[in-house]
Image 1 (cartoon, helix red, strand yellow):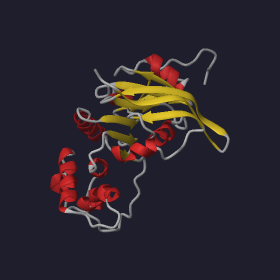
Image 2 (tube, rainbow, N blue to C red):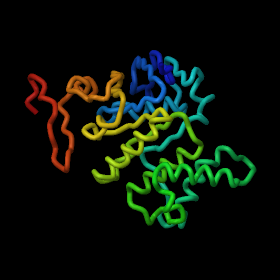
Image 3 (tube, rainbow, N blue to C red):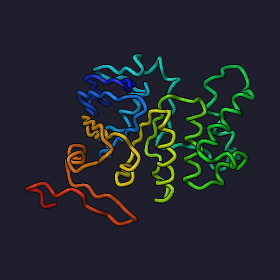
Image 4 (cartoon, one colour):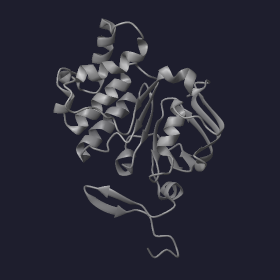
Length: 254
């Protein structure tokens, strides 16, 4: 039987007095593949940053593996929404992934073991053959895999990804989620995404985030879930065509 890996109790958070998340409680079991869905500004990225320990809640508690996020941060891998880098800087794929090993070093140089770990991470993302390629020479999907490999270089127990497919075409999205599903055999994964039509084939559970959180221990993304998460009609993009999947609320003619 799986054990709880994350327990959030009555968490609230605000920016400059403006509430972002209110009275959130959440329990996630180990080796789940959780999708955070919901509208822009609903608090998805904020919730991830709270789980990572990058932000502190105004109220409530977060326990990850029984400890506070700050004490367990070395067990996390994180791919933020916008990974910024100087595209004119001639850095290689291997150099990017090796950056993920830097937290293990303060005043010492990277070692052979660090390089082995980086190669292993690249291999798991099917990117080892590109290790000497310049990062700017890769496609958007290939770069995203490299950034995920950087997060995997420390062999984390939990992987957080914030909209990893935002700049990837539809086939690239499908391929990336399939790789994440493979990683999910050994790691708990949280992904923020609007790719709900694709996600349901790979995830194990859904958290609808819109100031509060409705957690569903099921891979199916239903109308009821989206209704709770968005509180309005939602249009999804499939093959470039918008599809409305929720009925307009009664009394709303917009």
